[in-house]
Image (cartoon, rainbow, N blue to C red):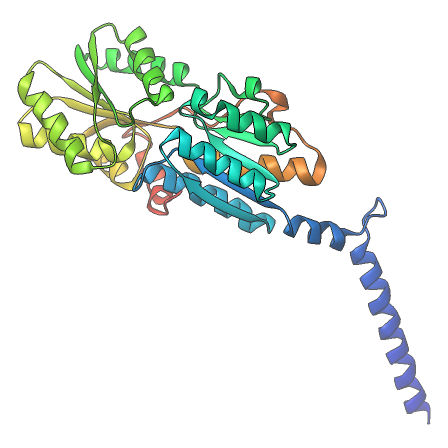
Length: 327
């Protein structure tokens, strides 16, 4: 009889403990229902809309960062891209119409996106700009901008190339009309001190990029430096130097596993890392924190994700991350 009574008592105590545990788990120190908050968070959905063309490894890292943040926070993240500003604007309009809770957008052509971004913010949809658009994000009503300042990064590259003894460089632009890329080359020229000219290439076709650079090196043997503005184009440039028999050095903005290996083997002088994975991850993080806690990441000011120089001295430490597709 005592045994049966004891068992019943234990069951009652266990049931009571389970109820109390459930209540404690459901309530926060402010008296709010945490489960409800989490459920609401799971209903959040964000759109990432960039100006990327097909096959651009840089933007694959932006996408990976955004999707990792979405997975970590348990929210929906939809990535889409179009290099045409009219089409990119349409993607923004569609995201607003479809009820997305926030938009992360790159503004390589701010004038072409102005109406769409302003309409989104006027509709109460928070916008974060990444990569390109640092000079216009406030004007368009965006929360903040995440990226590197092209002027600061470009000037640092110009100074470094000058210190390397470069005298005649070409700056390879892979996207026509991309304001940020043009700003980079202009900033490099401001501190370089030698001759530098822009070379336009079709960034959607690596074989065409290599052919264009090769032709330029064959035409002008005095070129001693090829500066590319994207990691995959640096690999094209290395191929061009070898194909043309040029003695030009290659330097680049942005990283990849192949870029780091070429830095290790002295085929690329250095790479400037603006951390695209961070841009995607922090873009979603900024919107998420705004929704769940009213935070303004950056306090209305740009958040710098770069620049940082990757050279032979620190390439080994970064390689494993690049191999994972996150650097």
